Picture 1 (cartoon, rainbow, N blue to C red):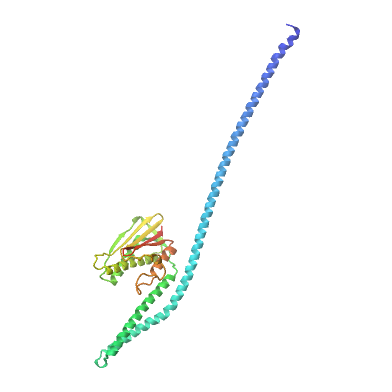
Picture 2: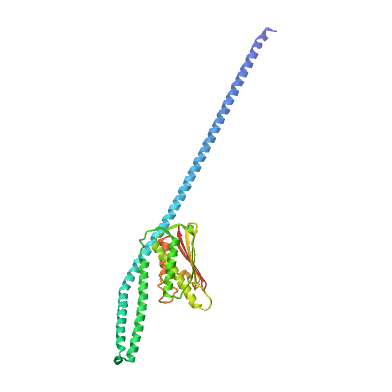
Length: 338
C-alpha cells in the first residue's frame, strides 16, 4: 500500500463516525421539535376547547339575561296596565258612589212619603166604610191614589235597588284572600239561590245537577266576593228556567241547573249551565256591561253580572265567559288561577 494512502484509512472511519453523529443529532432534534409541536397543538386544542366553553357559557348567560329582561319588561307592562285600569276603576267608583249618594237622599224621601201616604189612605178608606160617609167618587179616588202610591213605591224600591248596586259596584274590596274550598262554596250558594227562588214561587222546582272535582284542592280567593258572584250566576240561572217554564207550560219542559268544577292546567274552572231561555244572538257581548240587562223593567238592576265580572277578572285575575243559545241554554264559565 502506498504511503500516501495510509492517512485515508484513518480519515474515512472518522468521517463516517462524524457523519453518523451528526445524523443522530439531527434525528434527536427533529424528534424534539415534533414533540414540541405536538405539545403546542395539544395545548392549543385545550385552549380552544376552554375558549369555546367560555363562549358557550357567556352566550347562555346573555340569553338568560335577555330572557330575564324580557320577562321583567312584560311584567312591568302588565303592572302598568293593571295600575292604569285600577286608577280608572277607582275614579269610576268614586263617581258612581257620589251619584248614588246624591240620588239616595231624595229617593228616601219619596219612599218615606209614599209609605206615610199609603197609611193615611188606609185610615181614610176605613172612614169611608162608614155608611154615612160612603161616596162612590171618593172611593174611586181613594182606589186611584192607592194604585198610584203602589206604583211610586215599586219604582222607588227599584231605584233603591239600583243605588245599592251602584254602591256595591263602587266599593273597593278590602277582603283578604284565603285558601277556600270552591266546591263547598258552590254547593252552599247553589242551595241558597234555589231556596230563595222557591221562597218567591212555592210552585217552582228544578233539577239540580252537581259534578265537583274532588282534586280541585283549595283556591286562594276572597270567599265573600266569589260567593256574591256565584249567587248572581245561580240566581240568573233559576230566573231563566222559570221564565222558560212559564213560556212553555204544556210542552213537558223540565228546569235544570247544572254546576261542575274541574282542573284545566293552572286554572280552577267552574261552569254554571241552565236549560232556560238563553240569550238572544248579538247581545252576549253586552252582558257584562253595567246597567245592561235582559230582564223586563223592574226585575233587574243590570249590575249583578257587571260586578261579578269585575270581581273575577280584576279582583282575582281570573276569567268569566259565557256560552249561550236562545231558547236552548246559557253557560257561564268561571276560571280562577290555582
